[in-house]
Image (cartoon, rainbow, N blue to C red; front, side, top):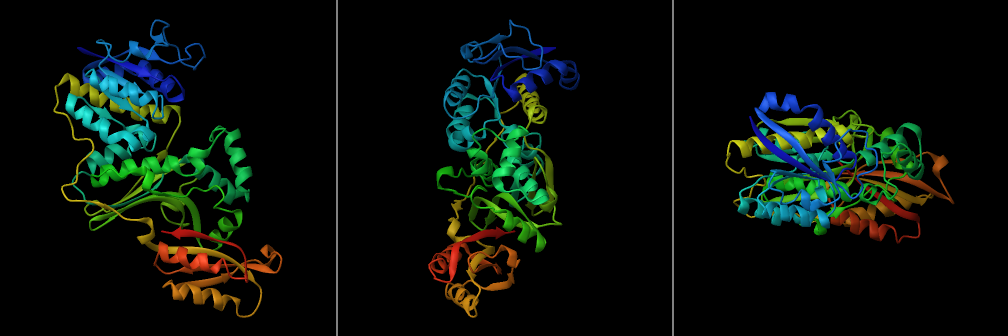
Length: 431
């Protein structure tokens, strides 16, 4: 039986899960693949902390160069994260003819083009199934199972931290700060939660999904991203629920003709919809295709074992390719026709607006007049609980028909300058 050597860079939560899975299921993998996948090295700056998994000291090292370029290691698993040393080591591994498996969404979103080009040049694999959705096989599904489909859209709840915070805010009426503190106490949020709550984690994942679905690599620095911090208030969650909606942080990827929109923002979804039922730390991706129709992929988007499961699945695929000299798969397709990234201002959708206006006759008419002048049509208007009134101003919720985001934002800029408005208007999308 052919042996394939594996080396792991990064012995954190996911790295420990991969080590555990490879050791525990080595025999099962051999049965299924007729390949003996051998863990040869695990590199980390800290090899003394107990990770809850037994591993021989001879396997552990603090020197990444005993993994990268090691002729006994066929597959390098990068679980360091970020774009610093991780990018350098991945490049070195590919240059050395080693295949790479990674869960590093930031690295792929920002530098994927150069790394995939290098992998193709060297004739080795670069797999990344765990970079989006943790234990959910969304990458493999889009790359393989749905390869015969035209993908019309992907709507994703792709960050468990944000989904947990929003779920607690709705279920218990917590403020954002209290829900974040609860997430940190439970270990679902980092001490510095910026990447999660400000939407950048979801943005990186959305960029990867867009590349897979539409064959172009969007520049993440030009994409529209709005997180939930300072945007979603407990009042909005309560008002949305009264209207039959829930608020979710969505990664939205959609193609219309030769244009693709890729954006991240808090969005109202129907309470009884598939995405509306996804709560807590769970992730989901709703995919619309021309042949398969609507499909939902749901599960844990992070965590030691779910993410390790996907990483090990990638290791198994790459091991099979190497043993059988399988032709290099085209992992990121290249569109044969130009794809234009649709500017966020041109995106059309329905909108939820919460305006704080004076409780006087005629004030709503002034707001409606500004919206109409900008081409924004009102679908419904609801005055909310008078208990939320403050300083003579009352909250009014407006739901619009489909309108260009730029037109809505231009209208709100004007509305917020009116002397009848008490605070900045809140705008959320509706899907």
